[in-house]
Image (cartoon, rainbow, N blue to C red; front, side):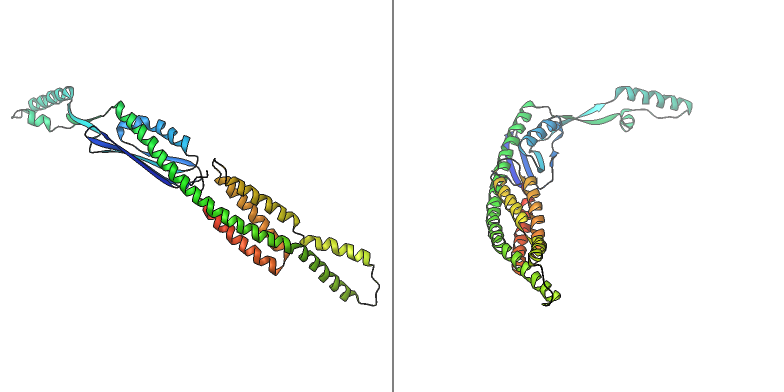
Amino acid sequence: MMRSMTGYGRREAAWTGGSVAAELRSVNHRFCEVVMRLPKSLSASEDDLKRTIQRRCARGRIELTVSLIGNREGEKSLSLDRALARQYHRLLRGLQRDLRLGGTIDVALLAGLRDLVAVVERPLEDRQLKRIVRRLVGGALSDLDAMRRREGDALARDMRVRMRMIRDETNSVSARAPLVVQDYFDRMKARVEKLVGADIPLELGRLNQELAQYADRCDLTEELTRLSSHLTQFEAALKGRGPVGRTLDFLLQEMGREVNTIGSKANDAAIAVHVVKIKGELEKIREQVQNIE
């Protein structure tokens, strides 16, 4: 089943007096780009989680956010640098003697000096949390994938309808194409006869041969054959199970080239109407394909 690149998934579970949540968002992108927003305590799991996502998503910009709700990420404590305190004390005592200063060097004075007391945050190391997050990310990926599949199925249905419309217009062009060649031949022959004049004998066999070769320039058989082949390949790709977005985009480009050539070679008002309709449908499909994985 074809998948869109747009989706959302979220899972949440209780953990240590609060909860932990994993949220995934996916939008269009040419390649597979994974953006992680994790608590510090889970930074070591970043590569593993990224690989898990990349195994399930071939294209798209996927953002993973893991949040600890109602929990402090780590415990904080105070640290005293005793060696630095002793150095401060010796230096201050020496300064007091040299300058013959009074007063006392007490705890209050030392506590105000820089870097003696620091707040240290000890990151939370919890293997259970890592296991829970891996499970939540797996569940969120399933939700994301289900949404991407539903949207991909809707896009595929819309594109099949438009493909049928393009088929109908192409068949109309195919029916008209032989008449265009014959009409071109007849007009060119009448023009040559008028220019030459009735008094001058013509080699009709040679004239018809030359005009036939010239009229062949507006023959659309090759372009219509290639266009039909591209339509068949596109319809087959819509049934594919793997990532097909780039294949569909390439086929649309090729179809666009063939349709442009048909319009320029035919130089026919009736065919021009069909060409305009085909181009309109191709453009609408192209907008849809930009969201296909």
